[in-house]
Image 1: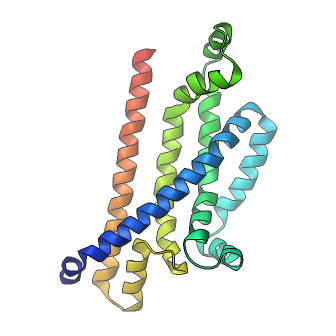
Image 2 (image 1 turned 180 degrees about the vertical axis):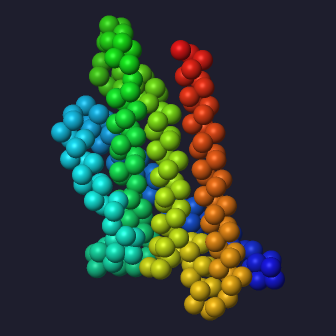
Image 3 (image 1 turned 90 degrees about the vertical axis):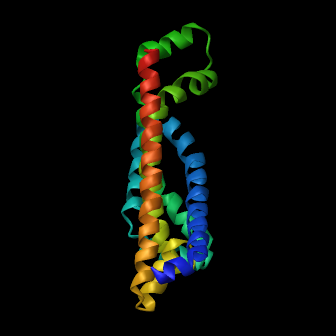
Length: 209
């Protein structure tokens, strides 16, 4: 505990870097996945193609993906964020498309009968109804990104993984444990917070129904 107490500021800095990596990647992932999910929900052939491509990306080991990106992006934040985004697309696109597909057809017909255009219906009716499923996908994505971002320290992206790798290199067990515990705590807090949000959204929909 001596190193942890004496270097809590370094842990907080690494935690902030880690959260920054994940937040940036999540924002970019959602910006890509939402339109892809909408298109995939409307067109089965697009869904099959997107799932095939994102499924292949998801199966590539993290270090192998970093190795493929480094010649084009170098070391640091850029390849780390890119890898996090690529790993996120399968889950997010699938959940967006699934959430939209699960909306009862009667609700969509009622919206059309009330004069909603395609865009207005999507924004005002479909996405709000699909939100619990989308949040469930975000929850899985965030936990995945926190995990992969730890490995990204290997390519000089910073974050909590940097503390862990330093501890391994220096054969300093307390550093490894401190970095691992803070990383695990971050994942648990993110997971539970989004789980609570998902439950509240589902409860709110049940009450309106």
